[in-house]
Length: 30
Length: 229
Image 1 (tube, rainbow over the protein chains, first blue to last red):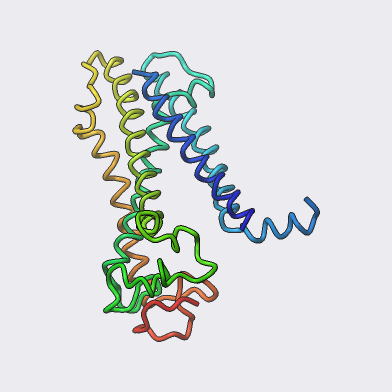
Image 2: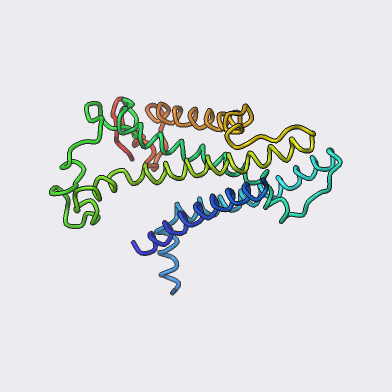
């Protein structure tokens, strides 16, 4: 399950980073 | 990592790596084609074109990505939640009639009914087990709310940029989330997800894909529910 945990963490990290990026992007363009 | 270790890593994570890869490829395609389309509009409006970095940091790119993310997470969130409470006779995705609801602790292997190798929070009992029992819906729900919020923030900025070009008043966030533009973007994504999920629920009763766990075995009768092949 170690590699599965790694892939799980990469997915969560990507999505959270993406959402954070888009929110910051929107806020900076106001 | 040796060759055989690498091989087993790829094989053991085939689904997530395949979809992760085509996600990145599609996102790259969206970025490049979105950039070209954005610049076409800029030219038509008599405005300066932007470089790729300029487009990737534009609110327009942000809202286009986020609005699709939110609808996908909503789709899975609703499907996971609805399949707890609703059944579809004959569907491999559905439980049997009579088992609607969150089921007994024994059936769910939690608390005193947990197995020795059950996850720690399934055995723990109390608030941890309650939390872990809904962790998939909670995380999918957080992704949905987070993406929908990102859509609203980036969508507002993109909308206001256009308003200003057209010499119209910009909106505030609280106005934008009630606007026709925001709900049109939202609902055009939702309608397609709901249609696809509804289709899958009923198509899998009568249609088969040999070898797929999303399907019943090819020879399984139509009326059999909850059997994957």
